[in-house]
Image 1 (cartoon, rainbow, N blue to C red):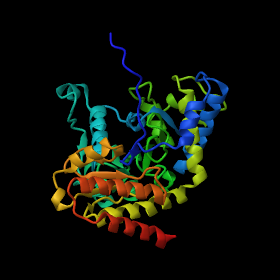
Image 2 (cartoon, one colour):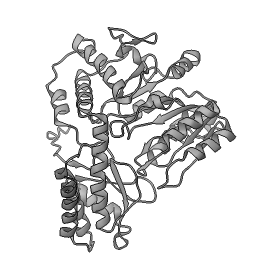
Image 3 (tube, one colour):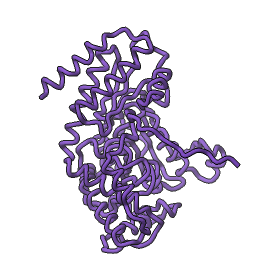
Image 4 (cartoon, rainbow, N blue to C red):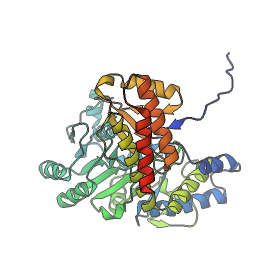
Length: 409
């Protein structure tokens, strides 16, 4: 038997699509929380307060708004549990993660025979997947046209897709769902806590899912926010869903949501971590204290600084998100994307390639909202580029970044 040494994980700069660097105040709440069981009064109080703060962050009056224990995929699994075998669904992916969501939809909508025919990649007749070319956004016009033709029960789309760095047309998607009597489901993993929007403004969407590790910044493993309209919950009451842990109604009971109403006491459903509750509660406190609009403006301001800097290095930016820059390297470095990323990560600078073709580089600024932090990101990326053989003048790039912040100030 081998007893390995204590695992020491060094601090790194998480400058990718997410997870981002968690706020030290969240880590402090996680580490300093006392030992308590999941039904201890302060743990329950924390969940009830977090539920209410989450509604403010989402901009919703949906009673069924709470957190699903786990990563963003846990929340997505919960909302996609609305879909039952044989349901007619249209999915509009435009990147790696909405593609994985679409695979999940195909698995959930498959009949037993369809799933058995190809268990890991089923092709149910009831699901239509409409691919949008890489680097392009899903348009409301296209959604409208497809829904008019297919007349599905459900439609799915990601709001912001980090696989390609694109923002999709949320209003157009919601309007098309309303027009054609379709129930929309949205992956808001990358937009919640970064963009300033109210989900109640999009009535065509009946279920939303997000994650803890991006805009909310509450560790990669605490709670994935979800929100269901009354219409979505009515469907679960009518038809049920084939899950227990991620059941939209059963899971809500532990957050003090019973019979469509808030109640003062939680009802046991599964074992929650007091540490996770404390961290999630603190993360929500921090972001609401900062202010949704102020946070959104800060992301846009600093993303522009990063965008202009990497363009000055000869890169071509193809994204339009404000928390992430997705870029093509200059001609002389084409084909070296993965080597560049590997070298940067070896030096504690956590940037990412895209996970599907074409290979691009992704640089994120989650929780990096100061001129000093953006300057470090730009400097370290410039060093990685120069090491790979890029021929730009780093000093000129850094002076341009300095001028951007000086002019803004």
